[in-house]
Length: 275
Image 1 (cartoon, rainbow, N blue to C red):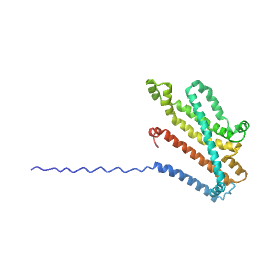
Image 2 (cartoon, rainbow, N blue to C red; image 1 turned 90 degrees about the horizontal axis):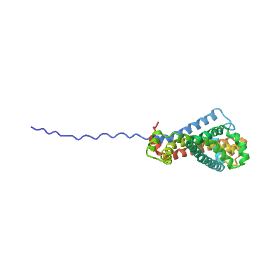
Image 3 (cartoon, rainbow, N blue to C red; image 1 turned 120 degrees about the vertical axis):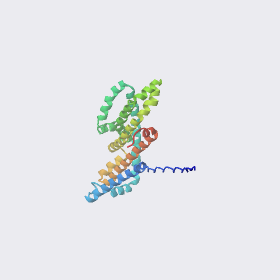
Image 4 (tube, rainbow, N blue to C red; image 1 turned 135 degrees about the vertical axis):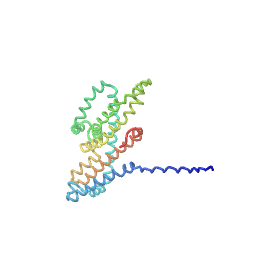
């Protein structure tokens, strides 16, 4: 007697549980949490130790001072941010050109590099009186100070990136009879861009520092001028409001640069290991 073997269908494998993407949430929540913790500690110090406002104003006093001068503060914030972007743009353009020249020629590197190191070692504040003589009051010495402060990191990062091309890629391009221009365009420059952006990200906060130093010395506008004026009037809360706005400008411009890097270099995130 034949027995029929009934085959039972194999049940489908259970779907793998979806892993929530926490990276985007952490990127938005953790910085805000850090700011909240810092403000809470600041507030606790002023309350527990009963610190006078002229020494360290409480966060609510800083907010009140900002609201009292809101229009002026926002106008001077825009003036400072504009000067930072112009000074950074000038230093990025000139720094990339000089860094490329250093990477392209060993004689140029040996001739220029000691001068750049010596110039970078000079305290820029020591040049403030000379900038006042050369350029007078106003926007030009402020831009010059920003340029001098953030110029060297861009030159160094550009030269380092262009001279650190992977040897196997360069040999592959030469084996395919690539010209020197083609080697630069398709191999050396793309390989150097991550390092160049590292120099940009180092230079951006330095540009903010340079602009503020210039505004404090001989500026006719900007948050640096506000800090000098309010500090001279013992209005520490308004000075702290201006300092807070400077921090906001620096953070916004830095992360704008990070976004530009991710959009311009999408292959970097795909070819590097994540933490």
